[in-house]
Amino acid sequence: MDHQIRISKSHFHIYILQSEVDGTFYVGYTADVEKRLKQHNAGRSTYTNKHRPYRLIYTETFIAKMDAKNRERYIKKYGNIRGFLKSRVPPRIHNSGD
Image 1 (cartoon, rainbow, N blue to C red):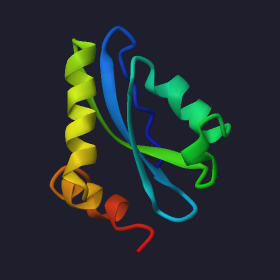
Image 2: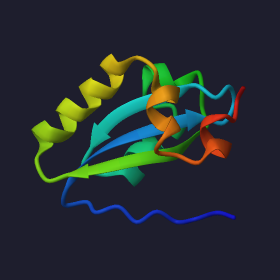
Image 3: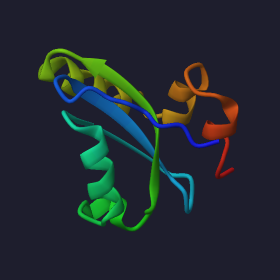
């Protein structure tokens, strides 16, 4: 079942995408998640271009841009996105691509 995710455009968000081709993850932050996902899937990002299409699997919302940026850095520094997601996302998502 496809679920529509409504995300406020008046806040900042970190997002995690998962490639539908090879299961790789991408972490970023933006004020407009829907627009950013479309950009990634249109090939407008050098890294994500070779792994597209992507699907949105996780978001967190922040009032301040700096908070979103710091959270993105933390997740990237964590280094194990699959491990980070284990307690936050249903197993059928983070295990796909194995």
